[in-house]
Length: 115
Image 1 (cartoon, rainbow, N blue to C red):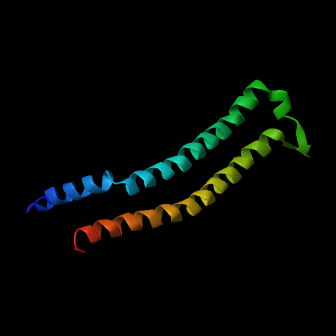
Image 2 (cartoon, rainbow, N blue to C red):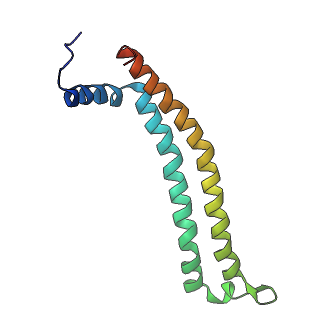
């Protein structure tokens, strides 16, 4: 067992290094990455589908669906729905992230003697 440093900043650095190298923390980062990267990629592609489709297929995007509403308007409005859906999915995933974070913090505090 290594001696406890008297400098609080040094003690925090040691504590953080121990947490950051733990398997639980690496697991937390991995599951966050597994959600965030695909969600970002989906929304990025979905967001740029509108300007690309309007630029490369203007006749298709100007197709009227109902009255004066075109496919371009529907795609633009659907981006709000896609953003809301991703936000809702993230809220659900964040509850899991928070639980794992809490477990990591509790384990770190227990190893420090509950200080």
